[in-house]
Image (tube, rainbow, N blue to C red; front, side, top):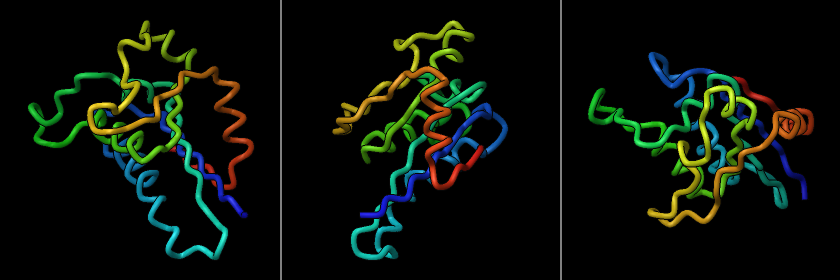
Length: 137
């Protein structure tokens, strides 16, 4: 079985740009390509938040109230609902003084079973090194 590994690396802030939202949208949409794959092939996307990108993961975003658009929070929860692997860089969370309690860790309220993983940067580098395609946002 051939598995194509895609790493979506999000390092941009969630504000004033669609970059982070596009990364999540592409990662979620990657699950629909299976209709174009050969028998036994699959796609394995991994979303990793690094640097300023960890701020995309903050809980209780008010994007709908403030800007009339859905928040990154809902996008991340949709990714978790689809069982996508979501990684957040431990060192960058610490840099901003954030903890597990400050970020989106699960999507239980909409039926998600997968949780966000807080990992060291070395693990994210391993994902990058083993991916067939790396996309930076």
